[in-house]
Length: 346
Ligand SMILES: [Zn+2]
Image 1 (cartoon, rainbow, N blue to C red):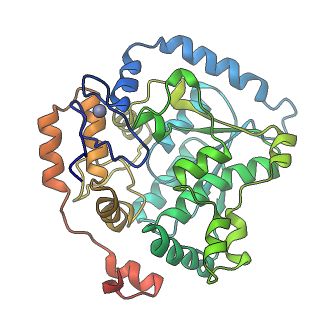
Image 2: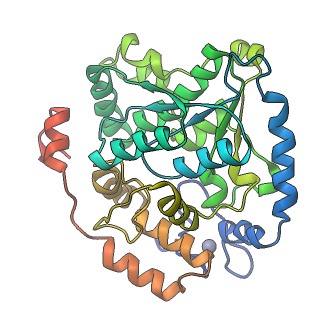
């Protein structure tokens, strides 16, 4: 473990699960790509985005212009704001029920569709199948969130195929934002491969099926990515707004709170009160598992982001990590009750 190194600017270790490199000056790839936020010509990039979406406007008046995946937190408000108010598109919002919904998240999601006056589709996978997959991924990957990530990243793509709406518009992607895996100028798009490698820890749902006999076809089929033939027939593509807009979650959340009544919540395990307010477990058990597996938790993500934006010094960020990282978690008992396991088995 002695060869773990840390970026001299932010707080990330070289063991970051998305992969991160340090340059000669000891600065990480994530910090270097972040510098682009202050050097790129963002008005020109916005024009590029406008040109990109233009051909996807539905001329018939009988279909949507694009699909936008949303939740009751994170960047959803800002994404819909850009798509509807700034690009003037008519989106179909889609949301996957994560099962760990807080009342605040439910309220935020309802307010989102009402304030922006959008149609929305909800997907609820049955609880028995969801629990079967959570048990499997908890045991195999140490993750309670895999099915949620799988559902959130596949339902929009399935909907694009079913509704024949080829353009899917996502927010930012963590491979760029956290570790600088790509430049903004690479204009990376969401694909089957990107989802498997970065969102799903290298596992498709069929990989779980082949390892464990506790899962059946009826549990997993809703998490399967559409066939290439169907994707190609419709011309499905998923773009990230973060490649075309100077992405700044804190500033965006503050704007959405002020203008559209996005509501926030405090968490013991981090100082950011904007992310994941819709979930009982993301900043709880999921965050603790992240600390166990990777040696750091969400507060390090938040602090590193704020250091890069120059709103915290490295010392202030480190102090916030030390203050929050070891805070105890809530709702473990409720989660275990729901899953049907005893807490000590964790
Ligand atoms: Zn860094």
